[in-house]
Length: 451
Image (spheres, rainbow, N blue to C red):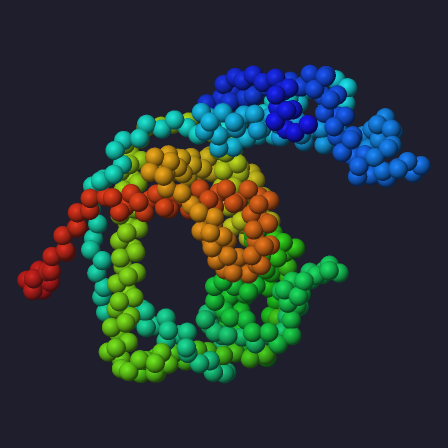
């Protein structure tokens, strides 16, 4: 018996539980439960071997006694799946999430089963006209300073490091050996082993830090010196074994090197330009493109502010809101550096929760406004775009792509990523449709005004 047949025998009723939520009540009568148990036992019979019986020939009561828990688990899974399929078959419901099924009484193999599932529904939003919103934005101007910043980036990137005998400063490179008080598990990865202890390893005093707190602790360090400091790892650290942990490090500085930035002529030669003028022209184009992106982002932000101001308050789906509040609290807690800060955070938890609720409201409000426009304009995020985002993020955070995808799936991050990407697409659409008035150029002061 498939889920569709089981669903036909599943009685369903509904009630408006809360705003943006509908609770569905399900009843599988005794006959439906018994019939499905028989189907499951037949499936099990063909997969398991009972001593004294050929495969598929063991009596059903014996199978049920031996595999009672497995049969119950499979029965419950099929009932929940059938219930879910029955609800989502109603195309009039804009379902955005669902809660954990709640049972009235424990499931039995020979009695009716009653349970409920609460589904979060998208909020009703009264949208104003959202195309052609008027905003004001400054033109995308490029200065010599902007071009200079572009060149400085490559000046530093191609710079050579040279040994120095003076105290280390931020941006310096240190050759170090270090140990910590962390006890490695037997199956520790090479990455984890290098993180907690290493011989002759290079450590750059720059963000992102190889070891949290290293920049502050080793600024002023000298060649041959030995230093101790406490590293507090954030909750989202790439090695889960270290997430939220405090480690005590002992570091010996073997060498200190400082970057020697290149001249304009050396940068041009490194990048195969014929002249400094040609290099500046190319970087001027790059700077112009970045200025256009910043201008577009400013337009996008202002358009949404105007749109948001025209839309009244609306309810948010309760399950999604509760999850988002927890996410916001988790983000706040990630910045805590010590046990004392953690205790202070817990003591003032209600204040932090109110802040988290405010942040969650703003984020979800934007997501659902953009989601509704996306449906009206048939804007979507394709699978290859999500795959590309995951690929880029896994590289940035130092994970294998498959591992990073699995982590997102476990915490429900894929859906959040999809909604964020959709919101960005809609924001770009609104910015492209906007009527933009350029801000007048700032008037230059006369000699009399400056004198």
